[in-house]
Image (tube, rainbow, N blue to C red; front, side, top):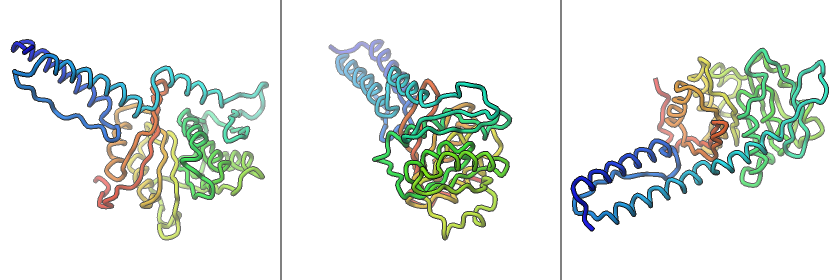
Length: 299
């Protein structure tokens, strides 16, 4: 059956809207490309309907491949992640939260007067990923640095999984970070973690010389939010990352300014979204330095 001109225009418009939807929602997914479609007036309705069905099926498949789970599965995994957190049965003089990761009970001392002394959900997402993907991302005897370590939960879990860990943050956070790291890894970890000051973009070569510092993994959880140091953060990623370094980065999407950081990040690194949790609005990324090594920082 051939289409009339009005039928053809209607279906072509609907396919255009569908294509735009797919591009908008799945443009960041690995190996996903949609070509522009141009249909002549003689194309049959059956073919157009078939193309529509294929595109819709592709949308569902791509969502599963890119995001790793549907809505129900997302809720189940998020519930499992959140069950790893527990609170003291009694009120204590020292505020703390507990977590179950890597076969250990971890106690984290927090503070409510600054962002860096609180465990944010992105850290739990990254810890859960490290634990449940320990074969694919084997941390035993690997050199790992966490930037913006905060309370130290991610560094602690990486250490318990066998890594040489350097946990870094601003000088005012190091006391609490050291306390948490020591309390939860002493006599438990294969390698005792190191806690070190790292102010993004400052004295990077002095404190982390490229010639002697080689990290297998850079880890970051919720380091992109409303702060004025996004340029310095990008410089820090760039300085610490070698050709074979893998970045594992959990990010909660908030405001457009912070979201644009992802685009700038991709000028230097090949970025892959390996998991997404819609109910938390948190994405987990894997990144490596671009193969060409010709990318330069934006002005």
